[in-house]
Figure 1 (tube, rainbow, N blue to C red):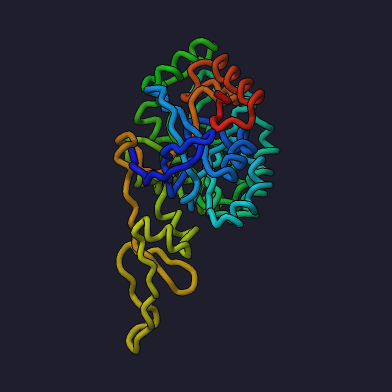
Figure 2: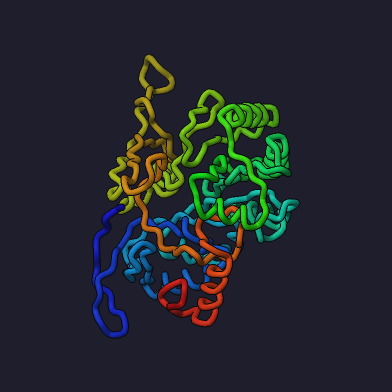
Length: 355
């Protein structure tokens, strides 16, 4: 895991040590934008929050004094909208990993209507820019009632409406056997799931790529945490916390760029012999005739197939009331709801759970 600088903060009149991350993830562990936006921005204003390690139960503190960038993860990030101007005031940039699935008919998620969520997506894109709202259809799950063609139709329905509002679609193939909690929850709730086979993954990738071309979406496609290589279909391995995207969105933040070791360079001037000056391989163009070379480094603390760079995740497991049938972050629905109720009774606590 990433090792962040520490700073002293005052908690209940006593000095304590707190991690002071530059980049914050909010959050892989729960849906902070949907359910805890008020809590998070209250803690941001107060300068710190607390976090309980899920493996050893130790409570630790996170200071937001040095925070320059936040990656939000959500299935319903509409509650973020009133707070985006505050982030701008604080000179904190962000982008959103927006999981916009369509399992309405199957009832696999407890989320607002698809129409409402698409409207939210467009509102956020208008506010932040199409590059700052990443569309996730995650996971792609096969069941007795959901075939490959069904999934393609679901993606098509959403993709047609998001054209021009995002640059990228990220997805994963539901790998149930790897996640014991997911397997148990699906079986407990009578969901007859099917594991993806390699040939099915290839077939889905081919259909997805063809649809992208035929419908002129021009989306970038990427898989999250997948071993299979399907780059021949124009589908890359994703980096959900992506140093290159952070640079594109916050290239003018010198403190952040110095931390990430990114050098912003001026485009070379045209010569007598070439109208368009040549750039180094891998150069990524920025506004004002500038460019940079990727300095993205994978967080070694993440699983082997994860391409994310280091960020401090401030969420906690067993706290998400979406109650998705395939959820990996809740051990049980009951436990998630109990923690949600405790939070509502103590919304000013320094932890999400109100403890």
